[in-house]
Length: 169
View 1 (cartoon, one colour):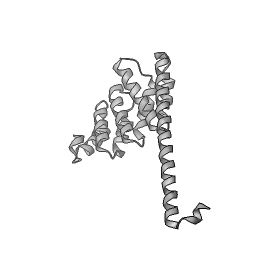
View 2: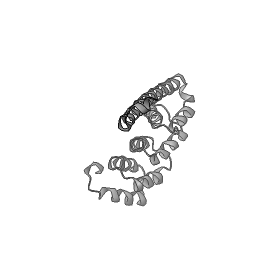
View 3: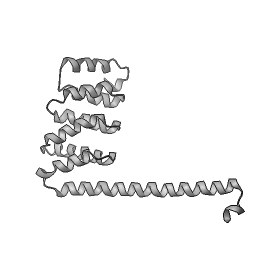
View 4: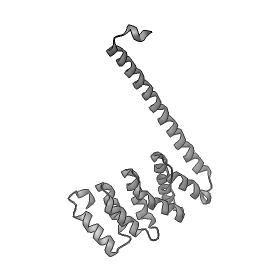
């Protein structure tokens, strides 16, 4: 009934404003839920005995939500700082993250691979470097590839070292 009292342009403007406000409320609620989920996962990790954390880390690293994958990478980094052992399955999953859609995740994974040096990961790092489009991530992959000096790795490195962006040199 109120619709009939308003001209079309005003009614559409009110409708758009209402939809925008609802979208903002939903986005805020989504951020709050994701933040709580992240805090809960971190608390669960801290409450878990160090020898039992690998399955939890694997779950985080396989999580579709990027902030939870990032948390998993952060916790692995913290474990390395504390000289804690990282399970081979966790290292293997970090190698898988070289194909992640997020450049930030791929870059953090490359830094961890450089520190972890998982057995046999050189070919996967070289493959990731071949398809990488982000110069910063490529620089990190180049750093990780130092651990596996092979002819294939050399050829891939040369491709990126010819790239004109100084951030990969």
